[in-house]
Amino acid sequence: MSKKPSSQVPEVSAAVSDNDVLMDENKRKEVFESKTDDSNKKFSEEFIKVLLSCKGISKSVRTMDILRLTYICKKIFESQGRLIEIDGPVRICGDLHAQFPDLIRLFAQGGFPPASNYMFLGDYVDRGAYNLEVLLLCLCYKARYPNNFIMLRGNHEMAHTNEKYGFREELCTRKGEFALTIYAEITKMMDVMPIVGLIGGRILCMHGGLSKGFKTLDDLRNLRCPFNLEEECLENDLMWSDPGNVKGWQANTRGASVMFGEDVVHEYCKMLDIDLIVRGHQVVQDGFELFANKKLVTVFSAPHYMGSFTNSAAMCKVSAGLEISFEVLIPEDIKIQERKPAAEATAAEPTEN
Ligand SMILES: [Mn+2]
Image 1 (tube, rainbow, N blue to C red):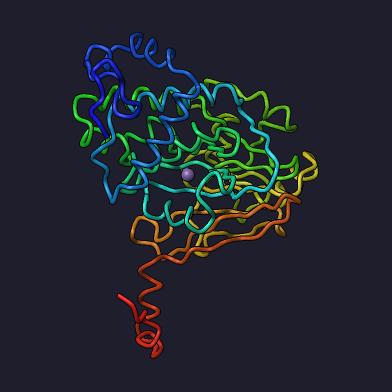
Image 2: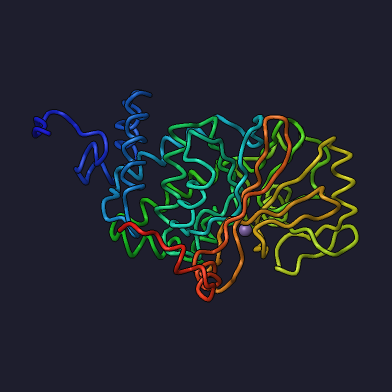
């Protein structure tokens, strides 16, 4: 490609490399607001290519691009409301926790957007090594396919969690003097992410679980934004609570929010006139785990979680007619360990290469 004249601004990689604009919120806003929808579309497409081509940690992700993407997605999240309603077909994925190679494996299995629709249940960041890659790729798809790529908020889409579990630290290591500006903007964007999803009016999705604080779907449509992240309230329960072997409601052993029993799941399904609750938030060995006579399922999509668990990852596949099935990904290195002793392993080796 011929060198662009200096008056033309390349789409990805920084409208402006001028630090004044980069560091000034109002100036940035002016630049981002001046972009057309078409230009933003092209920008996210180019950004997706950059991220999909990176092996491991990306060195080519620019601060201005991160800020622009965050700005675009914040506006989309704000416009889509607290409870986001879609129809099937869609694949529901649970926690990702910064495991970028595994996110790619999920897309390879389920189809890269827009071949399939997705609803992610939150916890994109923290714990793993690729916070930026996982979050940015998801945000790129959100920006490019806002109605087919749904991102709910988990308890790791919060500044006070990110401070403890790795995201903030990774940003500081990788982004130096710009880290805190990026962090502040991403935090503001996370604060307006939707918290609840409803598929076909029958399948309710959230990161954590139920709360005493709501009785109707309208209560969920009217969730507060913003709210105090440290307060015990409906919004936080939806991102923090867990099902458990208890009767009714109990204090949560994780020290935040509540636990609810099978009886509560049945009561809420009846009260809300829904068939199923899909949530993430807990590592489960097979990637998914049914509860309360199949009225609730936990989905977890980070295989071999933190390198110390042996869990599989799963996606919950919802058809257009709202039938449910599961796709399970076995952790790569465990699969290899299991294969090695098999006699057919050698015979099965490809003859080419
Ligand atoms: Mn969680």
